[in-house]
Every structure is written in C-alpha cells, then in structure tokens.
Image (cartoon, rainbow, N blue to C red; front, top):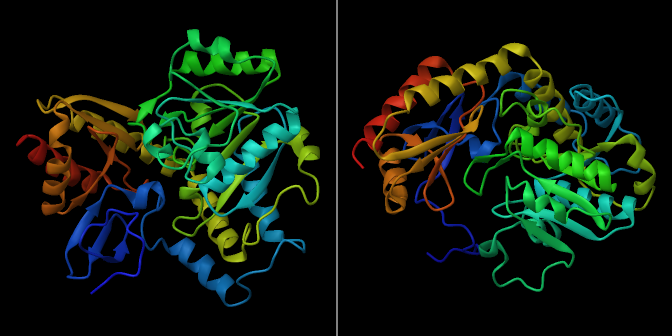
Length: 381
C-alpha cells in the first residue's frame, strides 16, 4: 500500500503505541527499555501522572485561545522558568511551539535589539530545520539542497579559543549549545564558554544559549548553563518543556523587551492552554531536588558501567545526555539494530556516536538493566 506521507524520515518498521515510565511497547506487544525519551522530550517518563492530570483538567475547560487575551497560565509558566535562572537580572519569556521556532525568535530578537546582522554559530551545531535556525546550524549536510541560506551567518570551530576573535562590534549574537547533541554529544569546555561570554560582553554582542536538548533537567540542573557560571542574554527551550506536548520558549533579559513590542513577532498556537498546563506541571517536577539528584546519580552509574569496553573509544556528555563514541564507525547501525533486538532503544549522533537520552526519572534498577544490554551488545562488536 502506498504511503501518503513524504519520505523525509527514515522510519523503523514498527509503531510505538504505549508507554509507561521508562518503557514503551510496539503494536505487537514487544516491550522496550527506552533510552531515547522521544529524542530528549519525555524527560519525566511516559504517562507521568502529574502531567496527565494537568492535561485532563485543562482539556475539560479550554484547549486553545489566541494571544489576543491575557493568559494566567502563560504568566505562571513564565514565572516558573524565570525563577530557576541563577542570575542577577530579570528575564522575560516568549512562548512558541518548537525548538526551531524558539531559535528563530532568538535570532530575530538579537538582530532587532542590536541593529546588527552577523550571527556567529559553531561547526557541528544543530539549531533546527526552519530557514533561520537551519542557517545557524553548522552542518553542510543539513544545508544541502536548500540554498541560498539566510545571509549573515558565520561558523567557528567549537571549543576553539583562538577563533573567538571573530566576535566583533559588528556581531549581533553568538548562538551555541553547551552540549552539541546532533553533532556528536560534544560538551563545551567551561573555560571556553566563559571566554565566549567575555567576548560578547566586550563587544556588546548578545549570547544565545540553545538549551533545546540540554535544558529542563537533562544535565542534572534545571538549565545546563548553571554548570558554566554564565548569564546568557537569551536562551531557548523546547523538547522536555512539555514532556511530549509541543511547546517551546525563548527567554531573554528584561532589557530586551522593548525590541519585541506589540506586533513584532507572534505565534497562533504559542502559549496554547494545553501546552501551558503541561509545562506548568513539568516545571514543578523538574525543579524538585530529588529528580536532579537522580539525574546526577544515574549519569555516574552509566559512565561507570560502560567504561573499559574495547569497542568504545570514549564516553562523553553531561547528566543523562551521554555519547558512546565507537572505535569503528562502520558498526553504529549494527549496534543499534542489535540493541533493538535486545529490547533497548537508543539514538545516534553523527557517524559513530551512540546517543543515550533516558528519562530523568529512570531508576537504578532500570539503568542497570540498560547497562547490561549495552555491555552485551558492545562486547560483540
């Protein structure tokens, strides 16, 4: 039977139809331990009761209302997000529907607020598939066939201090991931990030931190930039913010509010009632210290449990965003196939990195089960 879908996804030949906690089931009843969280989205696990209750309660009253009216739900979530920022300044929030949209808003705000056009990004970065976000992405494979891109973007080598001289008084913004996800789970070095921040401050350049994948507890703190001792001018969220309900956010210093006056930007569905209900529940859960401690403990358990494997060149990452760099690039697809046969789902990043993004709520026992499967499969490579 012909599919009436565009073939832009390389889909596996089974459907996930059910999920609970760290496990999912396909249409044949096969259960899998999910180390993907829907690509870092279902951070609180599947079927989380608090999020479900919030969604069901909101669904009984009102699903949607455009941004023509006040929204107490938006104010509530914005306050929750701002309260988690370890910074000395006030911030404001703009809601949208996805990470790409959040990054688009950030790029527009940077150009509008500074009056400059150059945006600096980094090689191997990934910021989204829409034209502005794709133009900020430092991967030729993502650009292929879609040129010309939005002008004004420059790509520097990641973690390279010498290259930062390219940040000048003509630069509107620098956008970076603190752990490059799609690029291979590559953590930014703390000293380098602080040097980027210093160059931005010296030149009046805005620093945008893309927290689409690293935010919402993924690295063991509410926001990943808390590890780096910086205060971004703008940062973006999506993925885990709604635990599976589409929602994104751009958060910027309050001083930037005047650049985004009425009519300057918008979204029909941004700040949707259902999305805000889910996000409010998620923010409350992610802010709890026991959950963040669990992320740190399970991260240490995984790093310790996966060391000393001959097939593995190195382990890298932060929190529950872990990359297993395989010694042989030709084995990645084979490893992923064998993991599925062993009922464990994982992701890839780049040509030879196995990416692990388990739910932040994963237990010690579930983590141990995943380690056992990973060690068994990787030992065969």
